[in-house]
Structure formats: C-alpha cells, structure tokens
Image 1 (cartoon, rainbow, N blue to C red):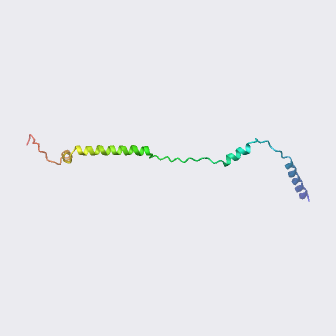
Image 2: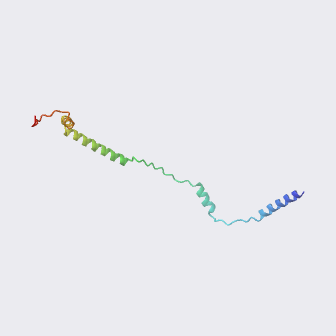
Image 3: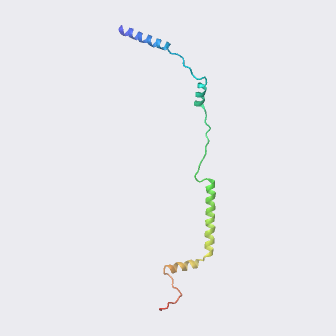
Length: 103
C-alpha cells in the first residue's frame, strides 16, 4: 500500500508542477520569421563553369590555324630534295661532289 501512496503522491506532484508552467514572452514576428526561414525556397542559379569555355575554344582555334598556316608556308619555302640532302650530309650518308685537296 505504501507504493500506491507514493505513486499517488508522485502523480499529484507532477500535476501540480504542470500548473506552475507560465507562458513566455516571444517576439510578435518570431513565428513568421521562423516559418519563413524554414519554408523559403532559395533561387538556385545553375551556372556551368567549364574550364574549356567558348573564349578559350576560340583562342585555341586561332592558335591552331596560325600554326597550320606557318607550317604550310614553311613547307612551301623549302623543297623536299634540299631537306633530304641536308639530312644525308649531316649523317654522312651521301657522297658530296666536292673534291678534296688530299685526293
């Protein structure tokens, strides 16, 4: 029976403690601010940042075209035979038409 009295006393203490709860003072716009913060929809701006942007593509294209034009003009200036003769002489693969003094 002592346990029943203890339980009844504890229940009454809990109910009495609930009556001691007082209301709190809150800012009048607290609820609006909180709900606005929780449910706001941020505008998401999707920006795609590629490292190979159109400006860089254009610059690369210009460089490649300039390099090709330079290479084509360079090839037209020198002839194939001159290049082959120069290569052969540098490695000693050709016979030269020059006469040596000691021969």
